[in-house]
Image (cartoon, rainbow over all chains, first blue to last red):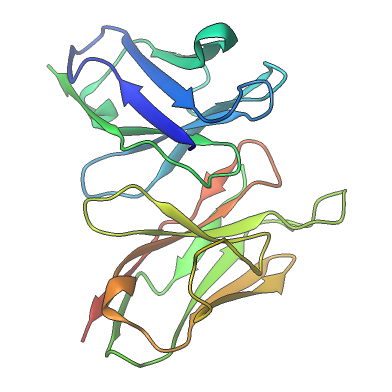
Length: 113
Length: 112
């Protein structure tokens, strides 16, 4: 069955770089894209970016200068890297398939000053 | 970027009541391929979002048919015909016509 699971550090220092991994199963990254979405505590959803099935990427305009999304298709993994973290980057980070039909459970990342 | 404005921000309902949520887009969501990529999601407390409706009016597999979607271009509506307790949570519209994709601000459905 289709599954996505986020992993990575739960606590990151301000000004450092966040690295998260989305490990997928039940589908191929060459057939589906993967999206990263985040949600600050008590707030709404923010679309961060996508890596398409062909490996191309699109990013949220507000995050583009700090964000990169890559993948390893052989390992069925998608990677998010975001630098220059600030406290308002504290959020639950989700990955989801590009049809937004399957979501990971999310990982809560706290940025400490 | 496309801005999606949802109203109302909060909705109070009794069990069995029918309710509607509006989502207005800052630009047309009609794609050059003829489809309109406006989706509705529900996020229950403490859970990941789940897809309810895709491309304006198509019910995702397993979603009860009391949910329905309608609209075109820039104005869209999600209707729940007979709210049930499991429907409580925050509803989001999301557009996937224009990159970057964007979400509405959310509508919280609570019990009256």
